[in-house]
Image (cartoon, rainbow, N blue to C red; front, side, top):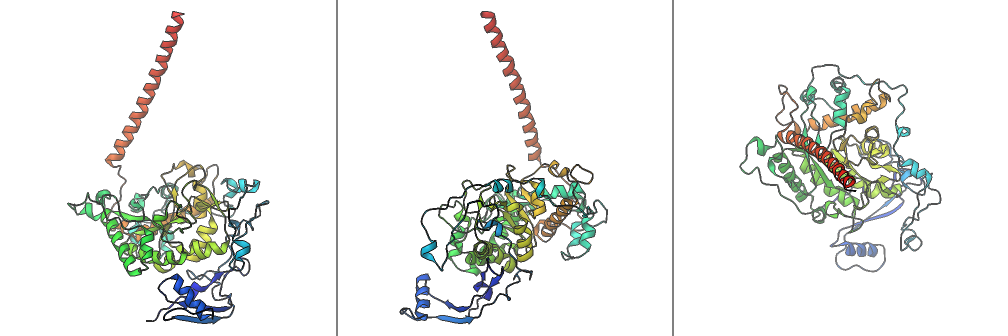
Length: 516
């Protein structure tokens, strides 16, 4: 049997030197063994330290120092460059007296210490965590995109055009500012319907362990379309991702992905909020059942197989939570600090491999911050790395929307395309042409996000049943009408109760005065 290992897997990221992936000078050892302990002993024996029991399968090869071969990314060939110094407390300019001693294999005794590191908030941190007008792009010299120009193109007509084909510009010129607002502010496990260009609304399933709601939930699901007598049953819930990764069986995991994709297709889902690619840092992380392992390489390779299986059924995958969601309690807005080497080699690697090897389409961004930058509004993360180096072609959704620190316009200009929520169109109205904060750069970013959503949905099962003769219309479902009526009725009853309460209190007060 011949086993090959990509040379890229042997590289390290040189955060404080070249700023690229390097092969260090020295001898590299690979081995096959029953377990990690036996593997370690075999390599130690090959290096002359003791003897290993049984047959030893050790391969060794020498490398000279190389900072050239992997100075460009394996995803797109883009230049690799330092992006995340701001997440390294020791390199963040506003750190004040804060510092961190990171673990080092070259100095275990001097760096591995018990206890914890105490950090304090500085004035600069307090300023940097707030998203306001200072963070909006300068629109000087930027023109508003063409909007509302009819070209008689429906989304289905774009099926045969590559992402970079200029015909897409003609197609996008048809979108109005309201259309783009609708697309970029709608994402509560769905993408918006745009009737003007024949884009149907789609629904997504939340969770990495399979379809756990009734098959009949989606109007265009095969169960509903075919009136399956079992349509009110639920799909299979598969073992948690830690168990899935423990199989080390990529073929089996790909089959699991295909079955999850089949269930999603039957239920009418176009996307899956999952699977989970954060790293097992602690058994108390809160989401360990959603995540595969403590190793970014294993996580990325196993997810490559599962993502490939799910997407083979036309269901796009939102791998989550991008990136560094290490806890559940108090996770909203927490600042995560780490060196760029650790970020790239473990945490980003988990997402990178499934994008490069399985064309994973989407991600869900995390609640947390990289240093002081919220993951959903960090252009270094979402534009420079995710689209630039890794080469993801789909779109991003935020985690469940939290308006206390998330700001829609900042997400969009930073590369977070839609929220996991349904937001008021008024939140983007001020940036439209002629409005108080008119900003052409914001409109261009909205156009980019709209294209990413449209292109991804076009090449998914969300377009099942759509032809060039199909007309997409917006319909309010009965349950939405019922809910709206119930909400207004509740509001009316609440107002009536308040009036009666006030009258009653006034009556009681009047009686007391009369008695006195």
